[in-house]
Image: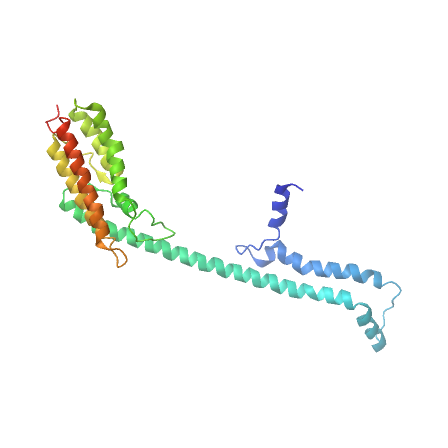
Length: 265
């Protein structure tokens, strides 16, 4: 027998809690199979017997058909057993659905509160942000099915990778002949990848760019503060922030060595 046929056959003996009990094949199999089997055993024994209402006839009936009657009684036992399994499966599904609904509600509440928390902070820095994008970065393990409020590991690594791949590598390729157009094409792409909307910002020189990077670092610092819990020490955020600072310092040093600090034509 092929594997596909075996899988299809086994599916008939699966209790599906999403459908009614009487629509489950296993229920009818458990109920009817003992009756059919009992009939198969009883039929050969019935030859030569005559119907009678005497006590002796009744006693003989019980004696002769003891095995078929015992098999037939399994119909009720197996039917009730399958019914219990079906009810148990439905309860498990109800509990799972309730847990998923609670997790989804907790996820939405946590994410919406983060948006309300971060938006005015970004406004104070005169920077437009995508709070949901930033939420997905610093709470990467939080999903609609598991509202995990623990800060992500490697936030600085993510930030560093995006700066390198989306912006810094492009500037290294253009060095030392940078243009204002190049900077204002690639920097907004980097900013967008980390949840910062810089499409409406035109950078004219390095100091403007550095100032914006510092603002982004401070916004991320405040965003990570939202994730501080009793289980998360502030030293973690301090390490991440120092990583941001070091990265900006390295970029500033590179800019000095590669004539990037002059005004771009």
